[in-house]
Length: 519
Image (cartoon, rainbow, N blue to C red; front, side, top):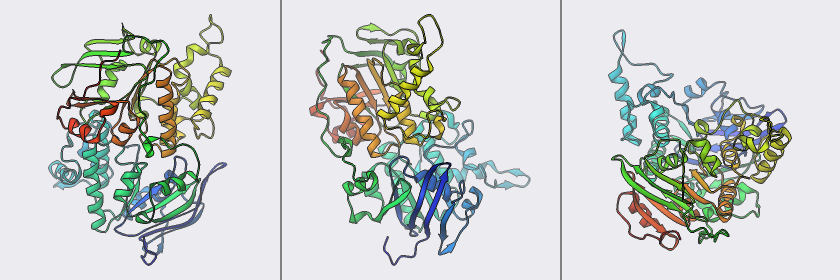
């Protein structure tokens, strides 16, 4: 933003504490009308707290907020909405049993025809907004039956139901396909052209540099940098966010691709994982294998089946066919799969992997409780052993938590993901299934998670990673399998992995570069 531009929104000296934790320490932010402004920072930097202050959820203890040059007190979410401030949060807030139309009208005055609510007008308005960003969104399907990407789009539709002066988007493309993300980017540019300010929060730096004009970086609750995107570069932004740390940036941040599967000491001839199951809309057969030491990337557009394939292997959905580990068929449910060395990190951590009543410590220890029994004859787990394990994992993954006795819901999104991933560390894992491993995770945590996945593969596991981030896919995978409408359209060995081939296969064009079968 040019210094001579009068900002639409200006925050100066904003401070907020939660007990002994200083979440914001004199933070500053200036956004011009009609600009797309990136708010950057690692998990725990203060971004979420700043957003909650703007949305009226929290009140600052010090500092000032100005709108159009006038001091503003945002006392409640309703006050924020009345000021034209709209928020699209990373963790979605749709009512599961409501469809997109009903969710779109929550908290709004319904149109009426005489004494009756005008259902036709309600649907027409939601359809009008959806046509701009999600023309294929099923408006009449309950939110609980939508895919994560569709739920994200329904949330965005709800936020744009009324004119907005500022739209805050927190990781809005993290669960979207490449095509959906491009449509969203077009909407963001359209909003900016119409004079609406957009505050865009994303850990995808390529997306930030392509879409945003200005940036502000938070670190440890302080504003440590701001300016024009054109005047900096990726390395400069990473240095601001990390404080110039020399920790290794893996290939997801621009380094070399992890080159080849790791040789495994046991030299087993059978693939670590093999599956021949009915799959896809027509129930056609699909054959899939993964060898020890491989990191197999699964890619496909929304609806391709990449998440469903992982759920079938994990046992969360019934499978027709044969799934084997080390040549022996998998039988029974999830518990038997855990006993056979399978591990699973789901895409939707809040709905599928976190339980609010449990502490962080207990959540980390869940798959290990039988290993922590005080004595073989007793069903009671040893609390000291659980505590030592949780502390070790928290240190290993640098989990930012005020206390391991707190609820997982008190963690930032990125630290929740670390928790879900970390609970599987310390086990003899044979097959690791990971769905969107770094969704909503900062660049530093992404490098740490990638390093752990590589370490697990090096220890002899077959690692299968489903991701919608094509850059992550290329950087992390030693082999790439592409799905389209439930069919494998490409199976690319390390030396055949190419963005053009992957995208073509995702749209249904069969690619014939198939690696040799695992020995």
